[in-house]
Length: 350
Image (tube, rainbow, N blue to C red; front, side, top):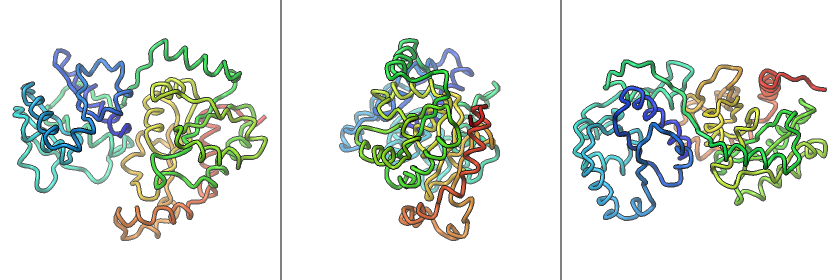
């Protein structure tokens, strides 16, 4: 997933600082490469394609290609079946991953898979940084993922805003309107309330929606449900043409609000304030990265109704996610949202 690849790139970034002359390669799904463009910490991007998932023969070919590169170190931040197989055939001198039952024999270094965060970095960051610990790197560790935007991309985003006659003297808010799936998408009727609240709280703002073309009908549902006064602030058709276009457009926004996912993680990598709404079945402690109660705030149903989560494993919570979402009404966190807006936009209601 895009968020995982972006977060895991901090391993490459810190390796580059510690070992400036090393060859650092990154194996990722082909669809995620836009978040790595311009990252000079990475020498080569190796693509894991759909054919490698579907064909055992293609997976073997890929593993043998990696073996032929004679890597000194392989760091497996994915730690699933495909990567286990690649590690097994790699012949790397050192192989580092998380300590999990039944696979420790694959690695020279097995790192404890922590269950609770020690800092506000969040488990997603802390776990990945822990994979550097066997190397005893002495440099100060930088935990923040990075995105890199070209001048052309920046200018194209600015032109897009200007072509839609968006007043750039006003603050611009991006709404992460939809998750990657229904089970990660805050109920659309509730999202209407959230967008109306934002528009009512702040007068002179621009609102952009982030959605994919296949999600157009859901995005239109939210827009149509908003009050006319809210609709007047929404620029519905202002979208990046692709993932790089979204990154450049997000870079011109002041903050982002909405569903947990790649859009939020990319905004954080652009140093933008974030207000994240978590799905009931996702563990907030993992992905609530850089949480500080001001610049980065997240909300979860478990914060308000912990009794609904007692003795329920992830699989059960996933099955109940849609019903749990219905319990997660905007009234639970509207005051937090308003505070977030005022703290990070530094403007008052006109």
